Length: 241
Image 1 (cartoon, rainbow, N blue to C red):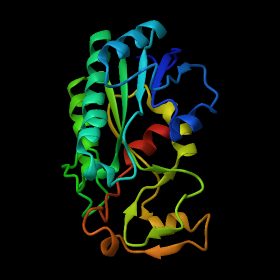
Image 2: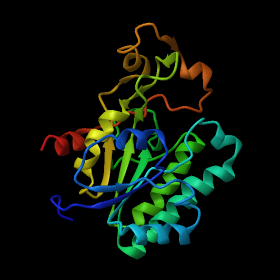
Image 3: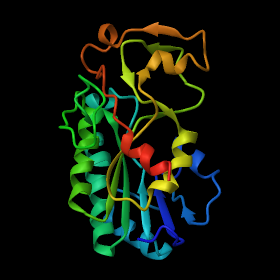
Image 4: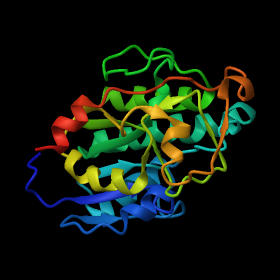
């Protein structure tokens, strides 16, 4: 896939938080942001019909059930239907139509114990949300014309009044990921995407010095990884070119 080619890109989850930021970015590519009604990821026929209609050459798959995270414990059917089956449906249609697929996964697929995980590190999710995203990854991994982005991102400003002081991540704001994304679409495989490794508290207090510290270990009862931080060396090499 030539990086100089103009692509027709379809973004699932077109009404989501990250898509709203992505829509503001200027690009030479033609990008469509279908609603859930226009492109229902649980319906392979509608997926195929929409991608054919738009003559898509790339799909960026953002549509997912994300938060609140405990919803994946309370309603596993919805978690499986959207994050695993929905992603599998998208993958099957892309494979059939030979469309490049870019899947937004999460840093939480890593064990969350030692941190600084490289892309080839073993995976072991600690909660159902991460398992559902890894389930989606399994389908995407079967299709070689694909890119999995293990992303650690959040809204700007940080939406919470408290932040974990004992959790290390690579949090980065949506705006920064949107700036990077179009530099990544021509790659395949897996790329860790995020910022510098630091505690959630240290990340959040940059813009909100009054934010309060809390402990994930004390409040989340082993349902939240304490160090899912990623090694982003591969990402840095790509975006520096």
